[in-house]
Amino acid sequence: MGRGKIAIRRIDNSTSRQVTFSKRRSGLLKKARELSILCDAEVGLIVFSSSGKLYDYASTSMKSVIERYNKLKEENHQLMNPASEVKLWQREATILRQQLHYLQECHRQLMGEQLSGLGIKELQNLENQLEMSLKGVRMRKDQILTDEIKELQHKGNQVHQENVELYKRLDLIHKENAELQKIYKARNMNEENENSNPPYTISHGCDVHAPIRLQLSQPQPQYSEPPAKAMKLGLQLR
Image (cartoon, rainbow, N blue to C red; front, side, top):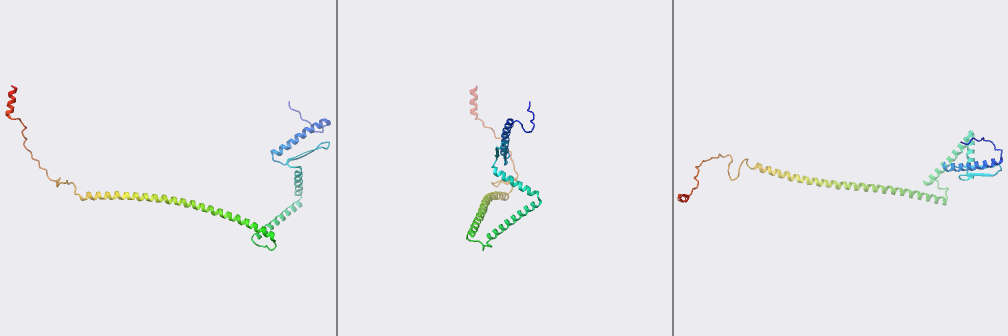
């Protein structure tokens, strides 16, 4: 069962009032500390007890918190008044004009103008500033030139590599052309040799188109043994 709501009013019992003050004060200081840590806020807390005892907490320092509070409170009060707001913007404009005048004067002095009112110390400081500025300008210029040189060297290496590849391709094309010329010459020589010889001729002076004459001959008797030998064999068989 949850706790019931407590009526927000002064506690009559002094003992209960002191106990409640101690508990609530500790919780309030804890919440203020957590708020400053979790939300990165500048927190200042001041508590006076009924007996006049002081309890405080500040995330930075109580003095800086109070000064900041007073300053913002004054500015807000001035902004509520139109006349004060006009004076505030006039003051800001005056400050900006003074800053602009100072910057223009420094620029003219850096350009070597209006140096008559400067003493030795001011001139020495101006010279040191110019030397530092000139050193920075030279360093930047050298860096740009170095980068450009590296870029040109890189491009030169790429062009050289492309030239080497083109020379290799050109040499390969020359070799292929030479081979083709050899093949073409050999083919022309074969064609010339074929055109120089008459068609359908056989060497040894024989003409293919000459008529062929055939002559039949009587068959030759086969070889037979002499009669004497045949008679001898016949007598043996008997």
